[in-house]
Image 1 (cartoon, rainbow, N blue to C red):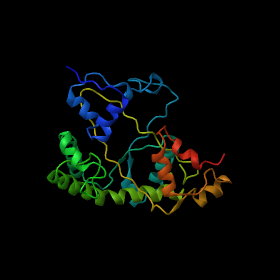
Image 2: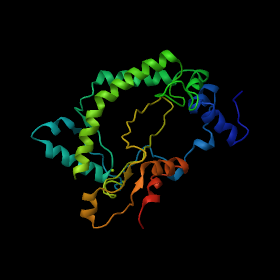
Image 3: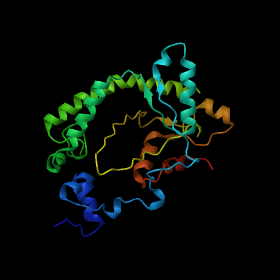
Image 4: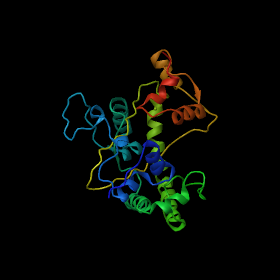
Length: 253
């Protein structure tokens, strides 16, 4: 018999507070996606969408050009992508493909563990300062993922620095709204699971963030006020996530 949840609270507790995740619902044998996780029709991604209003993704950008005579060409490609769609793919980035595959496999092994083992690393009880809230399950698995993750960070940080240096010379607050940020949306499939491994570049909590002086000089006036990064994060996590509305509290109308 398919399991049921009496109300939204019991569903939330099972998925979030108990650390089972949506995967836990699948493991229980749920065959129908709970209403809580079903996007309204207007928000769904169509299987085929040739709407001309949707910007075309730019071709992958060769980051190795940033170290040679074609630097300006690569920089211009990054500018255009950041302004138009807020998303771009890169190649020749310096991160070994073998490392990327190891990281992906380690992440999959993580989330294939049983819920009881995940709960050991829930936020607030995790013995690891690096892995929290259902992202690691048992010590030996934690060590395996932590090692490959740290190696990935060491090799990928140069790639991140290169891209940020390019963007900062010419993201929404810092560019005064010039560069766009894409909403993370992925269509699920019943045939295979997926994994994302993001890298976050963040300042210290007590540092101010706001439009770069160069961006304000270009536009004539700031579109966002300066705020402490910790206040931005408090607003981000203190409100329901709705697209990019987290920037609105700093927007100057």
